[in-house]
Length: 363
Image 1 (cartoon, rainbow, N blue to C red):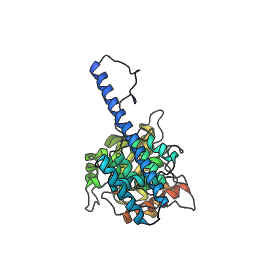
Image 2: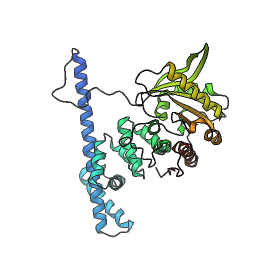
Image 3: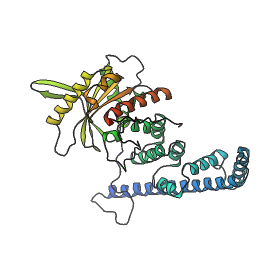
Image 4: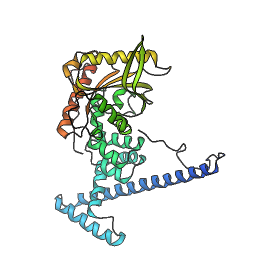
């Protein structure tokens, strides 16, 4: 979830003055500090990229053997360290070289330097092998203001591949600048929620799962996708004198719509999907305001029966999603399997004979 930012983005002589002197001075200091950090980050990242480029050019002049490159780094490190002190060891020089190889053109590095990230962020992102995935993490880390630890978790849990798995666009670029913002471009499938710390058999324990989610609501909303705000839990909807209860209700300020989440710890059935569709229609009738998009329904289940999903109304309804809840940190193989299943569910909506199958790379 994106943190609140100061209203002004840059410090200028045209900064307004309010009646609160202390608040105005505080705002000046905050903006000045941010500006200094931003310019330091940009300048040092450019310096490291130039260092990496110079190393690569020098390596290309000599032997193609790996031993030559290592001797070159050793010599450069020794001479720089004697002049500038610690900070220019061989590991750092290797990072500079990798940084340049990740963004080998001036156009790429110009875009990268526009992103307000620290060198620690870049060291994580440049190790992602897929260029489209790197662009995704650059953009999301900046726009969502991820800390280094948050970014590390997103990469480790293959957030890019899980977003792409949901997308109906055939090229699966996850590029919100080129595609209209839709649920598919924001939601992740599967939902990896190791922070819930639930390893036991969860059958019949919806209430326990719901309580753990509420206890970790900020992490859960970040994992669910972008732009979520909690509206309520066990949200009551009176229909013809009968109360219906929805486990979790969110509002997504990016999609401008309500999002209903129904927790299922038993195998998901077509009946559950039909019930969610009914809840969604009720919510549209009773709660949807002018300007809101149609309500989205998410069935968050620990077990998803593919045949049940295949022959349910979800195959034709673009506002209902079945998302696998993984309340633990999965292995790479487990995550790959779930991403492929998510692709198959998405392909039902695409009505295409050519499924999209994202491949998890190294991170």
